Image (cartoon, rainbow over all chains, first blue to last red):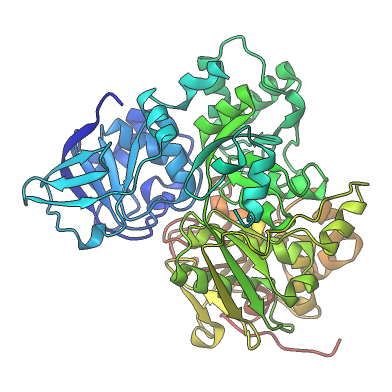
Length: 168
Length: 421
């Protein structure tokens, strides 16, 4: 993979069970342009409604368990790519959300004990993709991540699934 | 290996990977039997297909269906344009469209015998896993996965761990499969099944109709599970006889590598209501009886079948819906509409003050947002999601068609009055 080490500052949204309707509400589903999706991200999540209007470029999003449960809507992934979020670290992800993210080239990292790993807002994080290790450089601590399956890395590296379509 | 779980067996039949590669956590490429898209996401699938594979044909136009079911009223000019885009593309590529009013795509796949046990079906619907009720590996997928599948007929799948769930005991009316589904959702959410498959077993299963099974499996998504299966049995085989389709009775191997086994006792099952703000916030109805409700919907892939509407009619017969309540019914498919028309349930509900809408996805889709109302419309629906703000700005409760009908009469969450007829 081209970027085996991913760096970024932490942006915490440590809430469990965030549904796709809290990420990108269904009343907006006719919007598909990434730049138009961007300001609405977390628009229906108490405490984070301004997220979409903030500058999150280059950050690593830190979320809780079951992130992205709910619908199949691709916009709930596209919005974070538009924000130029580098990766999302969470305790666990809804299975459809996981596929949608990988297919669009957004890396999701599972750390089941993320809630017990100290991360403050804007801490400097480093993800070693091949070693499956998350390091909090600000606090000098680290924790193992779930291994990322090779096909996932291949798809993310290719920039998403669509580019593989001609290979089959 | 000692054996395979049901999902592993289905995947094995659809992959070029070797048996050794079929284990939980691994990712394999699979060949899809059927790929669908609807008026939500379908247009984006078409755009992605045309942008990335210009001039290409689809992998097999007989294995693709467009099932516009989200916005049957086209109540936004954008939806009308999206639906037209689907018709134009479908015509050009010789793809079947089950057009507006046909109903929910996932339901049509079994109501019309378009998919059978042991197959893999992908669609832009997070409740496509309801097809697990018939032993079909149904999965919701996003725009990118579906556009890729249109071109290649393939997808990748992360093989899930499987939890074997035994339902011990039986329940009796007015408890219905929705109460079972809500109760099981609460247990499974606490137990933790994120990304996992579930196989249901137990004596009660053979007494559940296909519709009951669909309701049960429809709430697995709300526990963040991948799919719930009712392995195909005699009930399933009997169901497919109407299409002259013979099926394999595929089940998981006894010695398969199940992640865990869980027994859920359902002997004293009562009536349940999922309270705001999550579907898994399930409470016995006694805890919320009396909560004022002024908007009620019967519908969705969870409880929009003729048998569900029949449950409501049974309660409403001879009663009037409270003047404080707006009561909407959205049958899942045209077939369900015909059924309730023929058996008289439609008349019973109309006379009670109910309001029918064209077959489709009901409140779960944005296109029918207006079914619920504004900030003062506290809703009770037979659907599957009550996330705050999803289907209306006010609180939303989830319950069975029986509870929905009883609540409609009272104007507040109520238990049904049990009658002898």
